[in-house]
Image 1 (cartoon, one colour):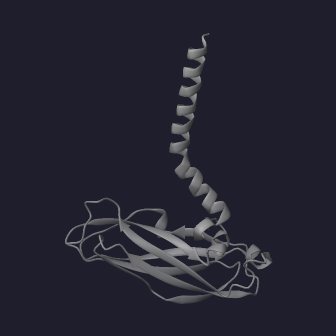
Image 2: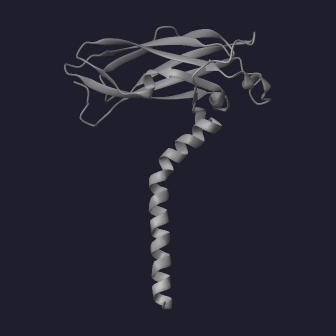
Image 3: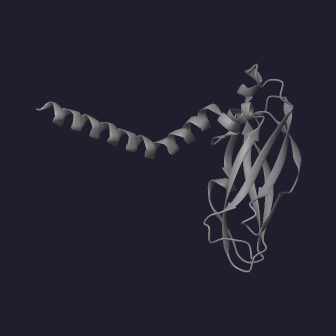
Length: 177
């Protein structure tokens, strides 16, 4: 094999690896954020471990992109939650446009260092939501706060957690009417 051919094959392999890494970066970043709680990313789970006797206040925040003709708000602005116990909150969304609109919700938790301990069992944010003209939907989120938070010196003094959602249109064709 000539030197030029080896160099060309090596360069092609590097380019192929970089393209592969580019495609894999989004799912890898998502997994990294869920494991570490980076930027307030929450985890997912199937069952709450059980109440610990300690509670925190969870505040609920809601936002809507200006490109989405929806009203979106929590039914309650805050709730006192037992750490380790399963809890549920409801949000309502209303489509104020004259056509069906599909939205998707992004979320985060503050303080960000608590994100890895905030675990969702079920959430409207896991799937896209389509509302018909004038339709109002009641959307639940079922969650718990992992008791491991109480053993972490960076989070054991947290008294309030904010769960924030922002709804965006699924595609650019969904603009307000």
